[in-house]
Length: 187
Image (tube, rainbow, N blue to C red; front, side, top):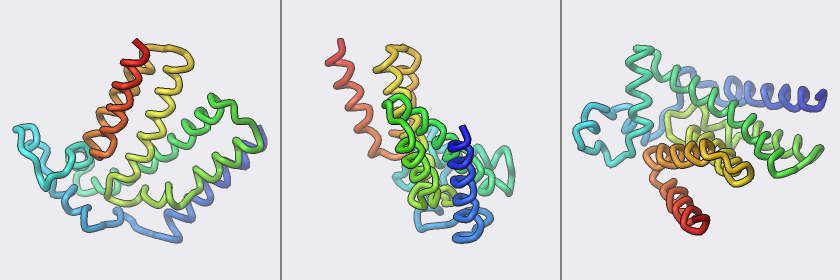
């Protein structure tokens, strides 16, 4: 238990340094694609039109946070991304346990995943990358749980996540294709 406390402390410390010292950005870091997500209008997509040829989930998240948090919606979006990313570290730890990876390797891999700037560096960006990484971890947990435990709810959750991820980034449609092949082979 003490080792896990140390790992969690190191991850938290390194992420705080990443968020506040290395790249201190209050409302989110902007990239050329960020404005396309910010300008997204959810009501238009509900009428069947695409905007900037972007998948709708992230733009809809921005519209939702703007409706709830007003002018602080970008900060709220960054906070949601940080929260999902932190939760993904715990889910990643659960994946390591399901794969029977034991300490000290388990703690080392979780530390590298949780503290990696390649993972945490996207959390403050107004882009889909942070949520994509977090949702991919959640997807793998639920599909692994379905395979190991044969719990139908876990399989349904994995399919739901893959569908949401497809509308977040089209590259995730491969997950739906792989799930379809898996289901054909299983049945």
